[in-house]
Amino acid sequence: MNAHRVRLLPALLLGVSSLLVASPADRDEASPPSLGATADLSTAPRVGVDRPKPTFMLHERDKRVHGLKPFQILVDAAPAGSTLRPPPGSYAGPVVLTKPLVIDGDGKVTIDAGDRGTVFSVETAGATLRGLHLTGSGDSHDTDDSCLDVRGHRNVIENVVIDNCLFGIDLKQSSDSIVRNNKVSSKPRDLGVRGDGLRLWYSNRNLVEGNEVTDSRDMVAWYSNDNVFRGNVGRRSRYSIHFMFANNNVVEGNSFYDNAVGVYFMYTEGGVLRNNLISHATGAAGMAVGFKEASNAVVEGNEIIYCAVGIGSDLSPFQPDSKIWMRNNRFAYNGIAVKLTSELGGNVVTDNVFEGNLTNVVQAGRGESGRNEWRGNYWDDYQGFDRDGNRVGDTPYELYAYADQIWIEMPPARFFKNSPVMELLDFLERLAPFSSPELTLKDGTPRFIKPELVKSKVTG
Image (cartoon, rainbow, N blue to C red):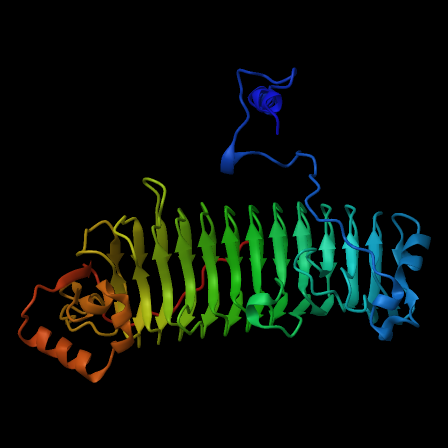
């Protein structure tokens, strides 16, 4: 770059930045637009974010599709707004849908892309795909090879079987759609290099209901608000659902088994986790529910069973004067039921059942600041009485950290947790403390009788 171009560069950048921030002529300067998490993007134009999909010749696709009729021919011949009921059988992909159609395969139609590219792309609004089997995508993460791309609003995807695909169902800038009763599994790859079974990106107000996602990588919602995930089943994946910068989503009535992490809220505000069963989130990173700099979430009516960590909270709630409510949940047979890794406070823990856990609660840092609220929980290790018969313990439940302080403050020492030497040290500490134990929590009204888990009301 010569000296003249160097001198021009600052002026050029200034001009570009001026164009980027310049106000449109018709903007009301007295009412500046809302920014950040509260911005209204419902009328924002679509932005092309996909990398161009490569074109593959027939000879580049697996030989199993060479003699199949292209499904695109049937789509092109169907009038917009009509219902396409293709004859049963197998067809060759890929398919691109650019007009509203109802495509009903009645569970007897397979579309196979021959292990190259994306199988089916919906690039319209108001379409319905039902009763199809989509299979045989490519395996490129660069081009997000998937079985189904959805790029328009108000579409319905139901009773679709997806397998042998890198990514399953990929919604980008797709709102007010329904994804219901689908079965999704990934290609047989190592966990980290599989694609996501279901992905929402800048997609709002969608209903994700009754789906089964197995042997995938994650189900994710990024920059996607006000979605409902209801009645889904997730097995043998990494994250059952991972929210990032995604606000006010509802997760209710789902069952998640044998995943590394159940539901994770990262950089979110709002959200409800209600009436779910999360079990066997084990391993070094096993966690049923996680919070990372999240605020104003409600966790209620869930059963969290046999996980390494039940609820793990890192710098949450994050926003000033915000809360995280944990109520009416059952924590059973977990390594650690609730793990709080900051002293910000703001957690309200009420009417939960803690039973059979190796450790009920871990509070990182030094001592109980009193900023968290503990009320009306059932603790299976409570050692008090209920002499007046009101089903509430006569004395508060107090949890102290004795020898546990060692592995709380030195995480590598957790390897020795529950070893004979640590158990002996803990016993001696409780018998005749030679160090000052730390008060982890105090529940002033512990339940004396274990209550039945009452399911919270499900939204419509």
